[in-house]
Image (cartoon, rainbow, N blue to C red; front, side):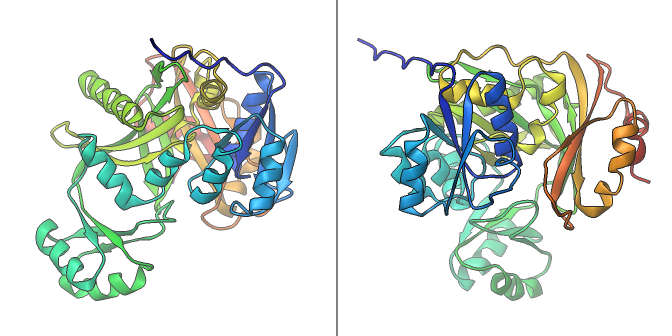
Length: 381
């Protein structure tokens, strides 16, 4: 006899979000549209999520007292980025349902655990080598060949926490610069493009995937996302299948971003996973009837998951640092640019301040010149 599927949370239930950044902000806004209230655990009283939430608990992500106060105010818990306390989520899981689970967070926030999980799940990844000692690094260089990428296992994002090792003379410097150890060494892939797939899985096991997205980075930070990715249909179908396989292996309830490389032969290699809404899924906010944030809220509250369809092709452009934000007056004045501001007070270099979406007719994503023209003041010269 199968176990009964938990029922959906009723309207006005409170969604607890651990983390106060822009993903929490957009999740809270999606929750409000679906009749839920959002309560944020954050150490920023005026951060992006706190500005739009029904309530906040101020405190550290590993403070037991703050966690208990937070749990007493919410009905279900989720998180908006990986760099929160897994131990804190474990404490919360004894008080409230946590979706995705803390176990999934532990996998995603440690690159070695992530690589081992993907290997065990039979998901293709680039060749890699665990590096706990200086000898391990020499062994990695021998096994992977030069050049390769050396990464921290934790707290790396937007290009941080990694070094390219081009020659044997780079080994010692890279090992000393990236701390604490262990590290992970990854073979550099001659890829044709980078893509991602956002997959949602509900409490009843229903799984839906958004269209494969092509991603382009600048200075280690996502710059542009194009939807749909300009890859052959069979490769796109394989990418979506891989994302579903990862979600199933994790026993995910919620939303998962799966970043992948497509090699020159059309082969797929998974790079990283993120069990939350993802920067490369922001195009869905304007191009889909149900965007990634609404799908995430639906999944973790037990609501049905509709098909993850798009009504338009789209380009998403990140707004990063003071240079991009200097264009804000022109952005909001340009027809066709759909701006999203994150409410951050200070535009520091390398800091994501917002994004802009541009829509095109379904099947009408233009070429390079058309994309540049559509971005107007944000076009790269």
